[in-house]
Length: 78
Image 1 (cartoon, rainbow, N blue to C red):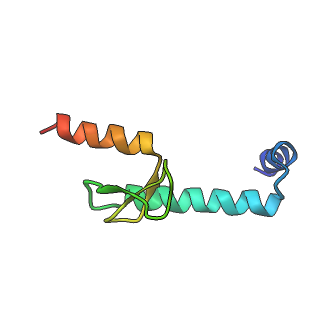
Image 2: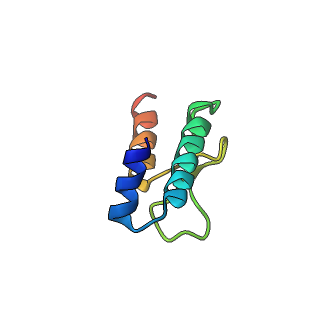
Image 3: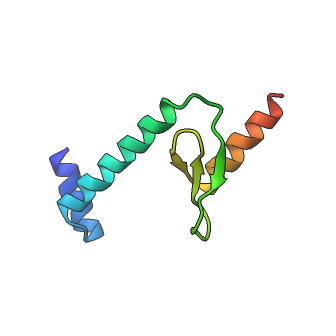
């Protein structure tokens, strides 16, 4: 993973440490979402302008598009 982090650092201008921190956040978010009791209850995250939705059950975050399609899938499954 070291070469990937170096490459991302080079193209993004972020430090290796920042990239590693972002990756840890991504893994933690994925764990929250996968361990949720479900169904997720995605709500627009307070204080955010757009594209940030959070599950009120697990605290996992997704994009507005992901929340939209998840919620449509729940409705279709009824």
